[in-house]
Length: 242
Image (cartoon, rainbow, N blue to C red; front, side, top):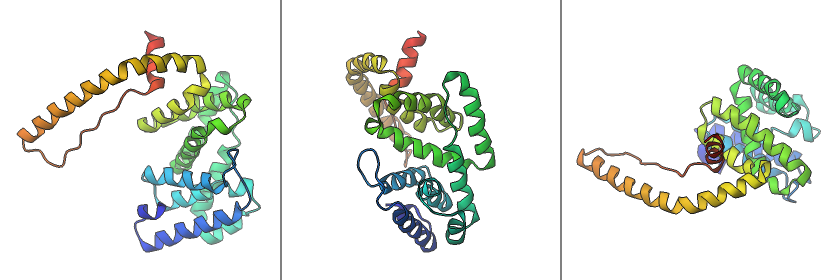
């Protein structure tokens, strides 16, 4: 629930109001998967919440498509949710009109995204949260569009996430897009990873135990040990490089 991320009753009320407003405006609209469109708006807001974003950003995420996809006016948004939320929604709508033209226009796309980030980084955060959900449901998109969207995700969105220091998000975007951007390469990489991951997990488990023992010997408390298997796309890139 989005409410658990809200610091005060007033903020929770605003989020609940934005949720109800977005649900009303998107009533009857569906995704390619056949699900109600509101599932997307809610997922984008949830992503922003897990990124640790503020209430205005979460509200902007809930409303991020109402200007483009419904008859909602800018005046409605500003009256109900304030000028900052309107600014965020307009910014995301503007970014949605930036079309990816392939590698030769990669730098141009990057510049446009950075201009948006310079105005308010929260616009870009919502856009990345939007792309994260869209690419996670890419199997429902027409096959002729899948590769274009996947390549755009890797070359623009994931790259931007990396430059912003959001490495975990970068890896998630790349891994979700990888099977659709480079199908043969993905299958080959998957076979390699399937053969080495079990052994790698054993090594990680052993390292965990050694680190835990060392921490206890020094009486270090409230420590968290985290680990992960290397992302499939970054593994593929390393294989290509070497």
